[in-house]
Image (tube, rainbow, N blue to C red; front, side):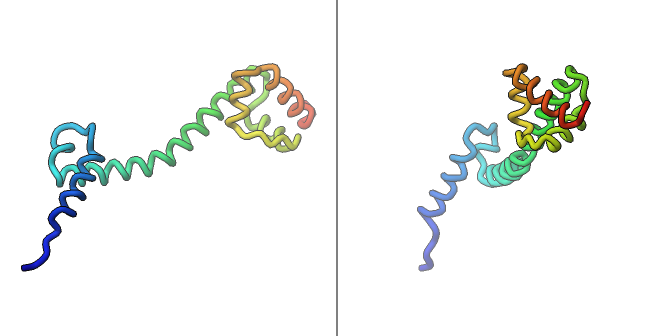
Length: 118
């Protein structure tokens, strides 16, 4: 008699169903649908891990742009001034400073304007 997969297949299926907890209807209960759904979920997860980085960068740039606008300078000039002044703060930390500590952001802005001679 040939060997069948038996317990190993049951375990493999159990693992798939465990990953599908929280899904609705057949997406949780039917093996073929579970496989398709998990495949799709994995693709979305892979894509969105990268999209999240883009989305946050857009948010930081929007915040910085608003902070710069309040101080009569364009975002592009601000970034050019940062490079000219050799200030190596990233957009995330700059946006946090702009929100949490406007005085510190004004100090950075002073250095940027001095470097640009505005």
